[in-house]
Amino acid sequence: MVTARLNAGERSPWNARFWTGFVLSGLVLGLLVPLLNRWVAPDSPFAVPDYLVPLLGKYLCYAILALSLDLVWGYAGILSLGHGAFFALGGYCMGMYLMRQIGTRGVYGNAALPDFMVFLQYKELPWFWWGFDHFAYAAAMIMLVPGVFAFVFGWLAFRSRVTGVYLSIITQAMTYALWLAFFRNDMGFGGNNGLTDYKDILGWDVHLPETRLGLYLATVIGLGIAYLLCRFITVSKLGRVLLALRDAESRVRFLGYSTTHAKLFVFTVSAVLAGIAGALYVPQVGIINPSEFSPGNSIEVAIWVSVGGRGTLVGAAIGAVLVNLAKTWLTTAAPEIWLFFLGGLFVLTTLVFPRGIVGVFRQLPWPRRRPGAPLPIEAPIAAEKRI
Image (cartoon, rainbow, N blue to C red; front, side, top):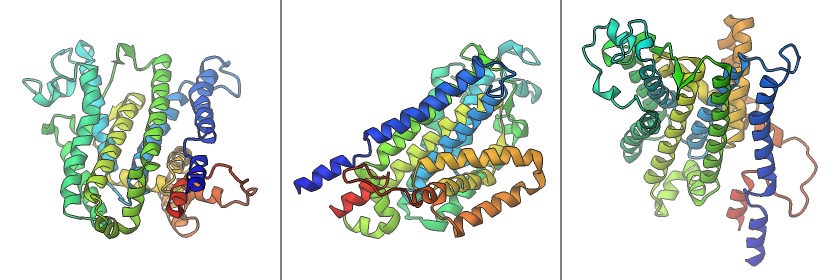
């Protein structure tokens, strides 16, 4: 038993190997990109142009969104096809704050109402817009709105023991209903046009290269914190319970664990992470509209996770970045084949390499592990089961 505990300690998921990879990744994303953008001559082949910085930031926002879905799908077996809704809700909260910062600089010069409300002849600011003049309030709403929405939805669904494809359909119906609702002008969110024409954030002009670089760095930090949080959950005792209920929920319930509470907790945390990703996304792309609620967007997130490697966290982030890089290139070079490529990629992932890119990488004939060397990410869980 003592030997087993020592071996388990050697295989700690927070070992030096993990922290080395984490720090190196952070340095590449958080230090190399700013250096190539600000201190390399623009005509250099190694320079990162100003227009690429928000594009890279957008990819990292998608990586956070993919992490949030992998947390519930890869580890708890909950295939949510509505995570785009939580992403959009967080984005709308940030958009409302940015709209309130415009003040008299809008088209109509009305400090009390955003331009679209003046155009639609609103007499006063709706009650749900109160408080969005302040960043602290907006930041709280970015987490609370998607979190509370997910908590209520999850409590109703998990308490009724809705699982599998039925839960996936319900989550997709949820985001479709929100999509239709936010299209309405009388909802007070700009209708089809959404919220745009932002001026500044925390007093900084959102169009300046320095501000865009700052938003990019904030996204890098957000991605790092999101990854650490997801890893902390998945390697904990709760993570083992999630894996168990993913594979045999009825047995976990028979052993006395509250599967409802476990799924509700992880689903709510996942929604909060998706909302934060949406909030970081909006000032970098400059607009939020109901198209972000499109059910197709949520399905696309599932494809990112599947391509990168479900249940690996790292793979989810890698899949999000690589698929969106391909999307950016293909929609410019050959826009008519993008959807065929995306569908083919999902089929290929399902039939040929179901473990995704990370799974294929781990199956390569690497040198055999030395005794006492750290195991891969999933290994501590398997080792714990053997012990």
